[in-house]
Amino acid sequence: MEKTKTLEQIQQDAFHPIRTHRFAGKLWIRFLVLLVVLGVFSYVTQLRDGLGITAMRDYSAWGLYIGHFVFLVAVSLVGALVTAILKLLNISWATPVTRIAEMISIAAVMFAAITIVVDMGRPDRVHHVIVHARLQSPIFWDVFVINTYLVISVLLLYIPMIPDLAMMRDRLTDVPAWQRKMYRMLALNWKGTKEQWSTLKKTIKVLLILVLPVAFAIHTVTSWLFAVTHRTGWDSTIFGPYFVSGAFVVGVAAVIVAMYVFRKAYKIQNYLTIHQFNMMGKLLALVSIIYLYFNLNEYLVPWYTEKLLDMAHLKELFIGHEAPLFWGSLVIGMILPIVLLLFRRMRAPRPLFFIAIAVVLGAWVKRMLIVIPTQFHPHLPIQNVPDEFMTYVPTWHEIAVTGLTVAGVFMVITILARIFPVFPIWEVAEEHGVPQDELHKNE
Image (cartoon, rainbow, N blue to C red; front, side, top):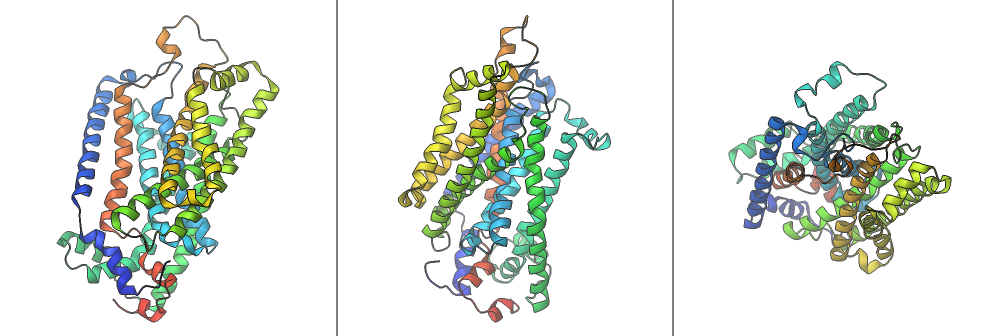
């Protein structure tokens, strides 16, 4: 924090974006709506004509949708890292960042679940996963942990926001009537009594502890969908920690991008300070180094053992058709950011913003490389099939539907940020030394 602020000043800074809707924001919403409309049109076409309008075939049974699903699940894990782990460790610099992390987490896990339904040829049968569940199936556990994580993430966003909602209920009298009514309902008759504060903080702590095993499970179980399949490139014992470490990388990078955008758009430089960016840059470098270690393990072992299909897969990645994407995602999305982040000036807001974008894009490409190329190295050779069965290039329908999910993530984050403060008012006030009596009084 640059200087101590009063509760009144913090409230004004937090409420200003809610009261003021700029033209750029309205234009952004219209753009997202356009992407959603295009995606809905393509998905309706897919429902009508079947998955044949995609590029998925007998061998490339998983494509853009599944790769994007894994990416969204990875992004959603940031709620556990920034909100839970850093908060439980009492790392105070992360306080203004936690709400942004939770907003991203909720949006990402929501559309990860939607992406799975999109990938189904018969979405009307999605309930069969529950009705005919098999406990030994990773698919069932994936559905279970995703929905559990979504519920806990919503609670982690909502429960700590109750005191802020009470402030909004009492002070935001110039917003539309439906908004005032929503704040009043969500505030749950908060009065700021000592008993309420005690219950609130105990509940938050329970949720912070509870979210950790679920968060680790969501990406571990997702990795098991691949690892338990006896297929070259997926049959790996380290896929669990490999996926989790990769999720931390892309999640931290996504939060940094959102921090920069909100800092500029909402003029909250006094809360998302250079110090926060510097520390998030260090955190990104740390988790990237851990992820690089798992990448070395993932590729070094099959290269050393020299199994026939493993070598064919690695050759395709290292020097074959997928080499530009592989080396681009590895160098631009991981190694170069690690090197740059060693220098303090590269952890300033603007350069860190561009580094984080490179990390996010590299992570997305990496998920595509995990999902798609390995399918073209089956144990039984591919022969006597049409040429298009031996390659995979997503159709514009797949791209449009995937664009719908991306727009949906941005839409959820944008809407949440337009009706709720993007940083926790009462927690930031405590960091600024606002007396407890002032925070506890009835607003």
